[in-house]
Image 1 (cartoon, rainbow, N blue to C red):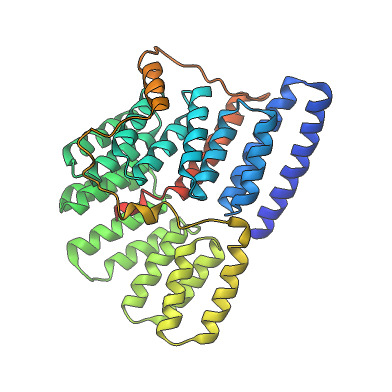
Image 2: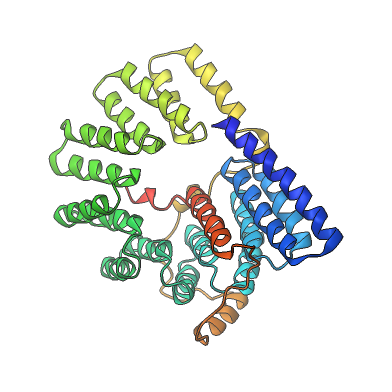
Length: 386
């Protein structure tokens, strides 16, 4: 909830101020480690809350003291992505992977940004570098395979999905994206097999139920079964706003306006920052000429998506103009990328060069989990497979 986020923000700010003062006074390594962890967590919290200006200040302030933190550099890069500053984002991404060539999220995010901008050759190279250094990061395989699928290279995409699933058998999002690829090309049997496997592995991932409903709708037309699948998904994933929107859309298509409205509103209670719910509910209210409802919704949206965000149209808006057939491999690689490729391809192994705390595994796991969530929310390429 918003209240819990505010409390978390307050605690993180107080903790960061205390740890930074301790570090400046005593210059102890463990205080530096804690400061990086707290700054990273606070910055990602702000990014996830659409407070991009605040997030940018947090990351830049952290980098003034901890210039070689790969996590803080990635955070700064993601802020620039949100603000539409692609060149500046590239600088931060490059610095991030130079500090830690095993930082999978940095390779993944950089690659997806280039993919979104239509720089497919660069994106391919970045994905391959990331996979070489972090072969068990399922989202890298997924992003690379998704790009190849969109470019029409179906067999290459299948091979990448299969290789990723072998390396990362518990990364169910790979199965979701692979299933959507098969659905898109009309291979319903394989799509059903893949989504069944995904739901067997993890039935508490909302996207799996969304894909299952899409497959059923494609296979059997407008029946009641997709709605039943989505309701089952909500029983198991009651905090997934995508499911509320999808089920509400079903209700609306069946003419049950009040039921649809209740589901849209419930979804907004669960996740007040899920913008597609505002758009869908606004369309519903406009359709029934509910002027008062529209005014209240606009006021609510303005309060949530405040001026702090300073966010231009998202990267997704540029993807409509991407030439997915690419450039035939003739697109030049930037000099920085070329240098990184030489380093990565010539390396036997890489150690993590990030600062960690008293419990390194726990701190890295926590930062990684937050990066998963924030990167996924900024680059919604998984959902675009539908």
